[in-house]
Image (cartoon, rainbow, N blue to C red; front, side, top):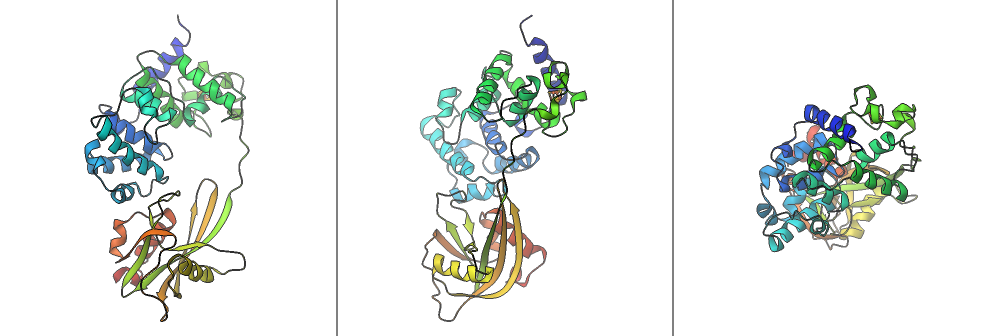
Length: 365
Ligand code: SF4
């Protein structure tokens, strides 16, 4: 019997019985697999399932997507975070239409050449959409391998990566890559979870060296946790003749091309009120004054905790009534209802929801 046959069979049987019902698992269209894989890169499955259906209703195929505006695409992506993924999807869709007759290539090398598609995603598309014998390694799979092969390598190290890709190739059953790769990821999500894995329900328990040696809590070897950096910021909604000022960020940073209320980081010895007035002037040359404090939102990112102080502002009498933009590519005066048409970073979106929920007078202008 070839090595790993038992393990492969046990995992495939388990997947057959236990896989979750997911929209892209009906028919495995390459377009759907591609979009789901990009969404899943940094986002939890439950959340993705929701966004995925909405996306497919709006952009049912690559041709429709390729004709969409960036604003529309970003708006639909709002809430998923890591917005470069959405911008790359749009670039890729245009490229597929221009160079690949609107189809996703089934060639691993051609997939790797597309914007936003790295080794993991190329492997996932080649195997899941086209059932090619290509391995994949994601965070779930790294964790499972560290446990079943009882690896004490530091997660993310060059050696650990090399070992994982070798193992993924070695244990892949030929002609079953679609099910097998998904089965590994599903096992990581449902059974071999980061904390408290459900070893007694695991189809691989008899193959798992960490379980055998009672080392599961030590595998993968714990990483040193990085300190969370607190950041304090201030922002403001400028109200003028019943309209609100928003600006569109420059294209090149993490929230590139998203819309926002101007603002920025609170500097040493500054109050949030002073920050928002200063930032407004630096970014737009508006002279603003504080009308009221609205709220403080807190948003957690992987490495940062951002506390955002939010104010309602109006123009000073001596202020210009048109902005000169220094930190944005575009601006607009909009009604409160119209804010829904634009994509905002999470902290600003929280501010908008807060105002809606408390029925702030601003929401009725
Ligand atoms: S036995 Fe436990 S640690 Fe090993 S693969 Fe299964 S769930 Fe993970």
